[in-house]
Length: 456
Ligand SMILES: [Zn+2]
Image (cartoon, rainbow, N blue to C red; front, side, top):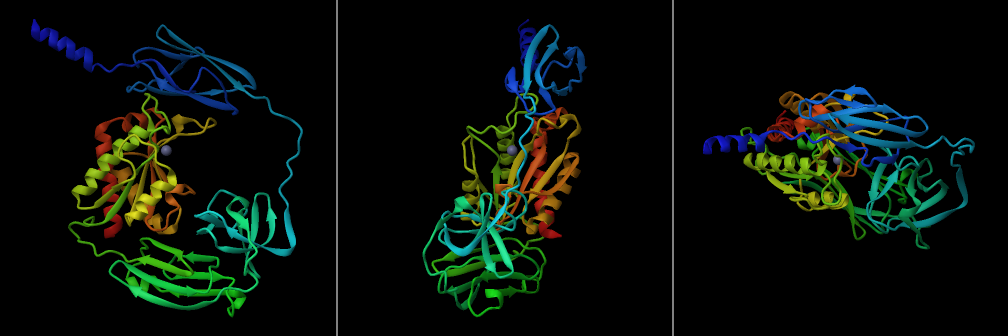
């Protein structure tokens, strides 16, 4: 009898509970400005689920995603699972007619102006837009700039008679200094140690710079005297010197008026233990007050990313790597802070873990798989290796490697990639993400991807 009670107890406890829950839209009365949106949630797969009478497929895990068209004005949706009803009112704002879009105009100044960068990590861009792959450099505070015009929220920066760039107006302050005299590169030293090719340039004052990565690296200083078009060009035959085409991190920064340029050497790899002594920063996306996306069954992205990251930490440590975690618990860590943690620990790889979601206008049932973001070309081969390994070992669909301007991948010191493991709002992908066995396999697949990158 006791045994029977125990069995009944176990059965009751272990039976999956399929609460009827809608995780998106977040509220039952919302405004969504899109021609369509979707309901994401969970329901007992044995019950019939309908939206305004139309039946909805429910995944065996309980998750569902269902797209609805939105008319302008008020849209009413009744969701029914068994006897339970939930009513949603979604307001789609009416299109505002009239008002002609006027594109921003370029204003060219009659006299050039002088500015200094006013923040650290100020991006210098090839176009006056805060988006896309248009970053040439990131400047520290107090770099003098010559400005000859403006367009919308950007100033145009003079780098030479034929070379211009753009900087956000919020990243500079006016400056009445020595700009009429260009900078001078007096000399440079080469310092090579076990880990880095290092060059120190002695300048008489700070000046804008650009680093172009490749088989040959180019470092350019702009507004420099006695140089063609005021541009000083230093080149370094990286591939020839290091014996590999794989670039594995570099940086350039001012230390006073000296400029330090470091290129990491490709490490000596032990064939049997390729990750031994390699420093890898693992970044669990989101955390604390920032939940990230919510999966069909109510799981939060921040918890899924932390669980996968902890598995990855264990896997990498077991292979002899030194692992740095940007967060170890459910705490909020800023984006810049995460990159700083990786750099302070001199990480060679920065792996950021995320789960994917979609905007209202997309269909979550039509998007599945793993995608990996990189920004700098040096990280493209790593992204490709990790993606192949994940698709193969996890059976996730190939959702491609993508060059994207995300804070965690705009770091040159380490090979930085951001992995969207799978889609939280796709019921089939979500069922994988909430499975602890999948998370463990995921860690192994990522570690193998890094291994393959190092070995091949
Ligand atoms: Zn995310």
